[in-house]
Length: 430
Image (cartoon, rainbow, N blue to C red; front, side):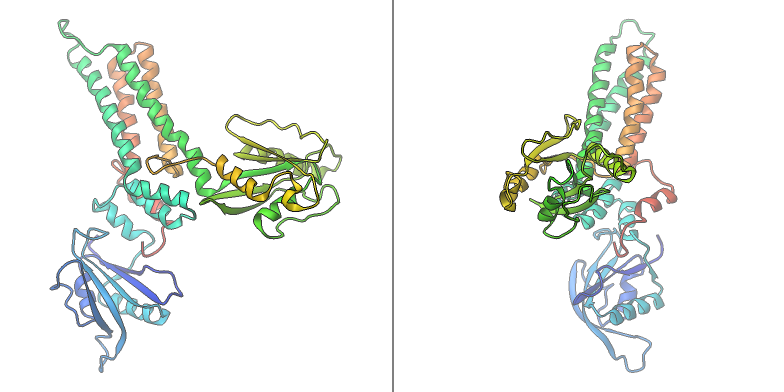
């Protein structure tokens, strides 16, 4: 990290644009383009300046700008940094970048600022990944979860787990080191087993929260199911406020699942309008019906529709799914399904997973995979304790559990290719 990087940190088309410069030459590079000596002003100060081309004969100003100066280690990256806020003209921004490159800077790669913040100890890896989630948050639920993770929610939980595992490891090591001293008492195996199971339950709770976190992040799946022509597509169009699905009196119009999302109560719902479920000899329609049944299995909420006097389709509903029954009654849409749209929207909100600022919810697939591996290692410890295996065998799996969990915060991650894979989907400038 001996080089200095620069990039536009704002989306194109705005009235203002911000260029971030970070690295050992950040202050001197920006100083050459303006009338402010960044390397001599106080840290965390803001200055008005004109941006000029130092190689131009007349030093005609390129723009008037505001620059903010940060000094290491008190900056986002932990390095000397400058943010240049100028007008959002693509020409101006590109010209300033070109001049910075001429001063020895290079263009930043996606996520490189946040990667430097992680490498410089400004945040752990889970917090760094939360930055990307915060930028991508599309509703209040995902924003709240990302902010919790950015403040160290996951890190705090993992710290508690690490303390529990180290305590368990210490008790086993003590048993190994002094096993030949008959006059010393150690924690008995039932006590160690209880501690291991308690820790494993903690890991399992975090892993299980991924089901909720993933739904909130990508949209809670809601399947609209029922026999043909009961109004499933009409309901979808009404909820979306647009003619998204074809509405027809002909049975079997919907041959495949149609998906779209809406925002209700700060939560994203992903609606799936499925093919009508019935017995049919049409092979194409049958494929749509099979996909409908599969959509029901993936859904967290099922809107089951029917006509008066017509039985509901035989659908297996799991305990973790919410079933809302809707009966199509009149020709007026607000009452057509025996339930007002506003009431239905509220029912959907009520059926959505509930989270609070204090909840730690896993939304990252990498974190979920790590937690599952840690659970597998600790499960072997639990089985070993139940089978009265020796402490040296148990200690190895305990060490693997601790090392595996450390991958979430980055304690054991150093290979550049691993970090590159994590940060590759970040936006440039962050």
